[in-house]
Length: 326
Image 1 (spheres, rainbow, N blue to C red):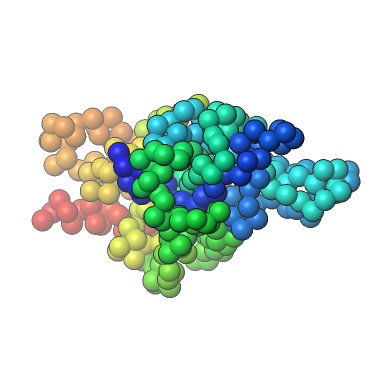
Image 2: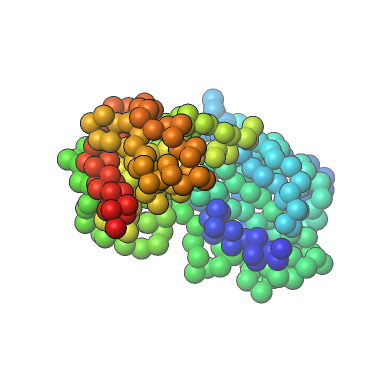
């Protein structure tokens, strides 16, 4: 795989980078802890409150789940500490990445490049790729970053900023407090690529939390030790049909059941809130497994106010019936 193709993986947000200084590699005499993280790039990591630092609390930090790569080859998965360091409150806060970075730092030299991306369906999941000078990956990357010390790999492709995600979460909370609309004009007012991505990201995170990363139909909750989940956030009324990112328009489903739901192979009866599978579907040999779920109640969200709305389920059932009646 080319490095550019690696960076364009749709599961990951737009990349940003830092060209490593001598101190970042751990080769300096002071052996400074970790990697200095540019203030200009802080908006693309989870928020830290530098106002909390001082003499009694010299650092504030949080852990990030990070996949570490050498070029396009994965080295390991790690927990990396993102922190503001004030050296006992004696200096202005400096952002750093420490703990867990050694597998890349030990392989790096000055002017190698660290490329970073956030996973779009897991807000504190990142991948860091060390791009070493003299490699094909470096040659591919160089035309995009030139001699810049840090910044966006492609200035016209901005990653989602933390503030945008925070605003999107607030919007979804506000939306869920209003009367539910199965088909709404709301989505049409969300203009701009970044706003749409941020809102979609917040929707997915909200659905996974509400259903504890477990499928509402099958009860399956496959996940990796590092926090990746198979379960997906499904829109009951699709966005293309006027549905919205209202949490009440969502369900957690496995990838297979998400596909089946979107294509009308099953629905959920409003009121009863039980799985309905058309007889025509059950006659298809490859769909026979859906009979296992027919007539069973769905798992509900943890918060009553965020439960999938009956009006959304009714819209989907009508759409399902039209598919099989034609």
